[in-house]
Length: 127
Image (cartoon, rainbow, N blue to C red):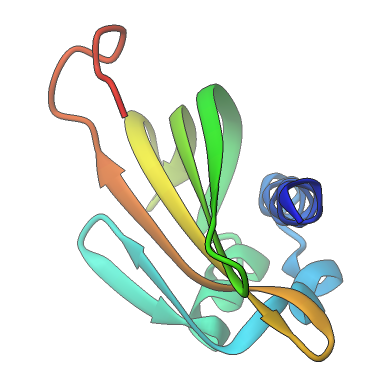
């Protein structure tokens, strides 16, 4: 299970960096929600901002990652630094990301993703 959700998560992040979410549509639950800094999207909105290049992910540096297994639900926690271009401006932010996956008839699906900006020293921040 852990390797399955980590593999799916990696595929979704690769698609984000390529700004081509069309290849991972089936890995995301239809009723998924995405909470970013100051904005929330449903699946359609999340796919649109990447496919329309409103968010351009330039680099993702993952410092820590672990998975909590709850049976038919799994949560991946990632401590990372994200460099992106948003609204034409390059930004770099430290985040803790939580990705919630649920087991469906069609396999594991991303159901929710939340970005929380780390407001303290990144190196000493503990998840």
